[in-house]
Length: 184
Image 1: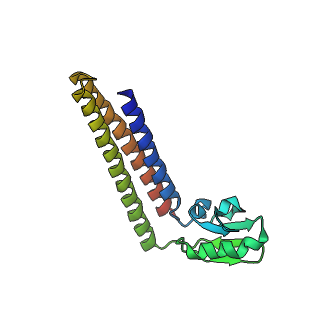
Image 2: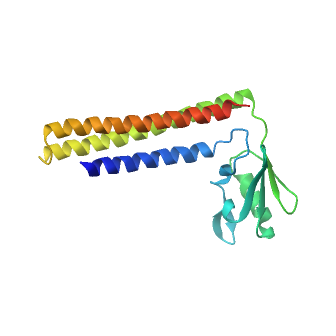
Image 3: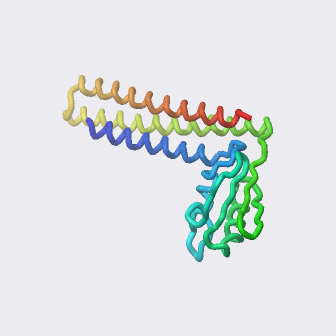
């Protein structure tokens, strides 16, 4: 039954990681290099992440600078940012690309908070689906007479504790991101 718990924890951890990646790509009015994580640039025929081909820094709270190690890639990086969905126009001065993050409007903040809540709910559904699969595994062990009925009940209780812990972590991540979005 320990294998069931380990597999379940591993899958739930992956769900948390996926949620964290999604939250990091939501821009909250502050410059965050992680908004560039999902943008791939055509680097001599190979799709490459910006942080693997340039120095990305945050000199000011609302400004992100990108300085490619190969200056000939400036146009390609600029093009990739323009075609992405981050909604910020890059300014290219020939050496560095600057991304100025605009102040968010109240309406936009509320929409972002809704998005955060929606993503949290999707992550909770994923966690519950993982729990259901683990419950099925425990029931199968009981059916195969590998465990007793008491072991099954104990396993289901332990599984619920694990699930509750991950749901709480999702709630904490969601609250932290909402606070970040709503702070001016």
